[in-house]
Image 1 (cartoon, rainbow, N blue to C red):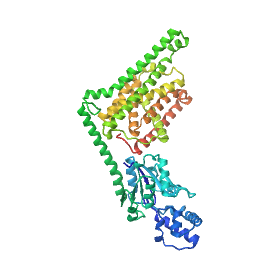
Image 2 (cartoon, rainbow, N blue to C red):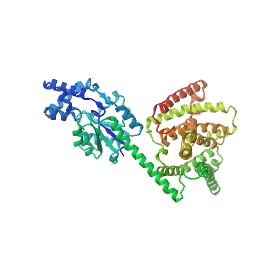
Image 3 (cartoon, one colour):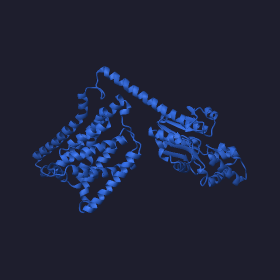
Image 4 (cartoon, helix red, strand yellow):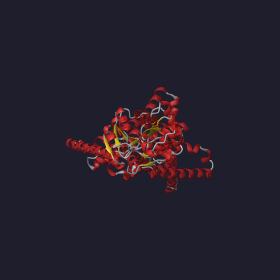
Length: 519
């Protein structure tokens, strides 16, 4: 299936003939005093510019370089904007982006011009990579441009998943030289005969027809996967093997809840084993250091950190096993789609988490106005170690372990049966109960719902782990920030700032970004 699409620019995305031909006319008039009709210059649209001056106007290599320089005199100021998007192109790009195609531009036009044109028409956000010629005349051959685009996208070993879209035989030939498929479009500047003689996979007459080919093959592939999944499910039922979609209600409840038992029993068991080992060491060696540690206020937190760290690889193995089961036996509609999660997304999640955590803390204090002695005991225990230990254990190790169990296993398994919203609520409630006191229980139940929705939005565990670590690290360091801990007015202003920024980023994430899953 083609899931990566390389687009030509001139004649494929934009009707750029007017600007190109007028700039060629300008160059030939200024440089050689030739008056050439615009209708005779459409051959310049698409192919490399220098090669076209040599081929169609009979210029020498040096003369062609001069002609390109004269061409750019007018093009950079005026010609670049004598251009328009073909009807239906914007809708095509939106549709392909929504369906998670990877889009890139591969043009013989210099990269700097390509970027300016995409930005001018407001379509640059759809392209993962923009690859064109160099201003110094390098990489003008279409095959070189396509090769460079494949390299930038990391698709050198996945060429069967890439297709080149163009309006001239240069685009088709360039694709063939790079071992990828191609589609010719007749609404540009090349003729149907020119395209068909180059033997692309198919030729289309409009952006709508191009959309039907690209999306249609993706939908056909998706249907084939679902049919294969259904066939596997039927075969497994015949063997009596229970898979996630089968089994009684009791089996489904057990499958969704036993990771919680794994967490409770595993954490306590590992913690007790750790204490037992230290106790044996102390009795055998009589070590004062071990005795001091066993009696220290930090012991409980460090013991929890050791248990969490030991449980992380176990939970991760369960998580990966679930992934394999879903991909093998459950129709792909149940597999959360993934979206890009880079530096910008990490920053947004961090700001969103700080604002959300501030709001939830306020809400928790309203819901629980009385003193919670159980919470105070836990809070004192967590604050006992030095800051570095708190950050490592409470801020990093704990969140990773909890996210693998509560979102990676419990949430996703409930989601298999009840859908996103019930799964978010129920997994959040279980997350809150596991903390053993009312204050933390209310906060973490609400925060667990938020974490589930973050995971659902990005389709990546990295997102909710980022949010959980952000909350816990901030809780560890907040009391060490002077203007928060010593000045109530500055603390209030800081909370207002976090709430404002969090609300803005929330709108950016959940309102403006296309949602890849059902949230």
